[in-house]
Image 1 (tube, rainbow, N blue to C red):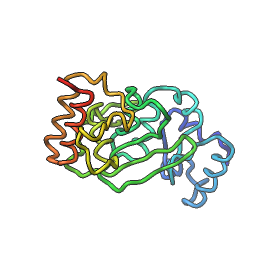
Image 2: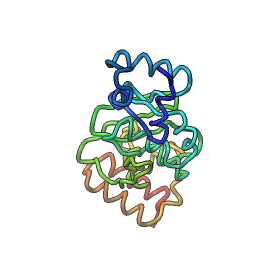
Image 3: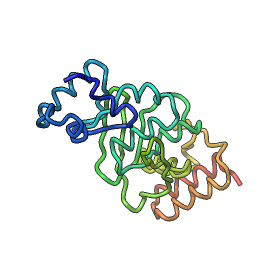
Length: 218
């Protein structure tokens, strides 16, 4: 089977084994036969294996890999029941500036990490009540969800292990975590506070008080 059969997928963000078999017909009589052919084309550089049974044409990758939405779309392909958040969003806004983070997202499913040749994609579990604060966009025909800056900060601090004593007189959270929160707009602060209030968590209430004392002074 020649790899030119893959040309039908070069303008698609991804395809599955089932989709490939429909195109290949009798040349891919079963999943095992198809997997062997696809594995060889991955090794030859014609395809990228996103996860088990899901592939991207290398031509699509080369055309779009520098575009802003590319990693977001890949994240959604790998795990549709998720929204981008945490370090990935905070770094985009300059809140975290010191190191490069993997693509991070939130899900109500189990926590998992998916690594492929495009990078590492981390999905953190959160309770269903907190699965909010994001908007859905679309690129290449694929919908993807992305947290607001305030929700990304809430998710990050909610999931981040912190000292037991968060009282601002003894602990400066912003200094310890090296967060650049000076540019948070009043509306974003209010949004963050609304998530804290709805959570009814003592930890998040202490975090908000800490931020107000050390960086978000009235």
